[in-house]
Image (cartoon, rainbow, N blue to C red; front, side, top):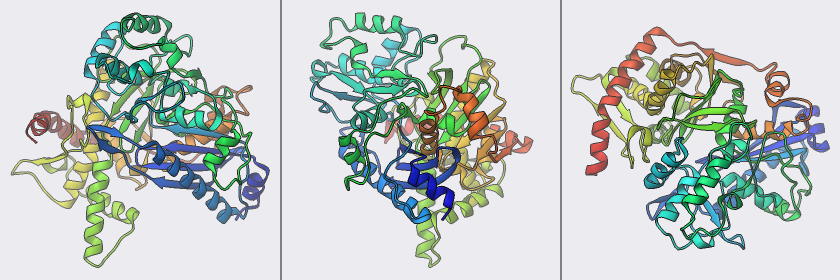
Length: 531
């Protein structure tokens, strides 16, 4: 228990961040005056479902999970500090970007939530990319909407609004139909000078859809756009009961703009300035690089989104991240338990990743494809996880686990090569996500994969939940400080950061692995066709 923490909680000088990740809903409570200080955390595990050939989450699970995570963070605050929070200085909501949530005029969901993981929008993205002259990825909200229009789905005439998961939760809690610009940039392209949807492209789409059954102009369907620091509403009485059904939470708490996990990852890793970038590794993995100048042209491997402040960012997004690695770790953990030597999850990872360090730098010829879902960068409509090796490869626990970690970064490396060819340089990449909790392994391997220094901070494991809490706390400082200055001077001024520089032997080993990985993608595509 700390007196300062108890006082901050009792006085409401706190900020609460809630992030809906792919496998976990996390809540993080920070001291608003000292955002680097985490006062309490809570979480709730959940999983997407593959139903009718669509990846989805039930909206009932959204609220069950939100209430569970909120109850957990409140209980943790009370246990640590002896004070039960009844209010907060500010709240922020973040979630997986992209996807498709479409509602009718009464606010009823028209079709099950279609997440970012779905790759069924090929015809729409081809048409929209040609129309706009920019790359529209399969997972973007406009791609899902236009695919529904092209397929003449019965619900299209009834659409009155579309949003992301963060936007949906925020609207239910505050009554405001808005998005942070970073999350909005994964729905529809943002104009570089306006921090709002691109007007030329909005008009182009309305002309394209003029003869369709879509009943409203696109802008009417999209949420409003706000930049970091702008007020985004307050917790309503109904919203307070949605968060805390016990009735212990008071309404009236201000909210920051709801953001996507990419934006909160940039904040959490202090990567919102040009020549900085970050890698977020979870169920998906993506890299964000803040641009100094526009790219020479569109690339299928890249999409242009923004920081929460509206600055342009090149994003390399891969649908498949650390899930396959976690599945293998769980299997080895079960083996240990069955053998009479049970281990905690962190200990399982420490053991397995420690073995990876002792293996050949190229993983001994073992190749791992982590594709549970389709992977556009790799040319895959569907995923088939695979382990492939030649007869003369070196198969040990260490080489297998090194290949598993390398496999997490494989598709990402393909996209990063495109950025390098554009002449984009990065002074340092920041990384966050659970895979970096085991010190000195995944971080070193990522530095080799990117051939650039990789930094991991103390808050890396809290990730985007901490990032959106920081954005919530920033509401009180926005009038005086730009977001980048606030992060420099207030949030990260005394932050401890561990930096791993690329090691020549690992760089060469990973490059050899990646060459085999790219060549072997033909086998992965054959598996999709055959199985």
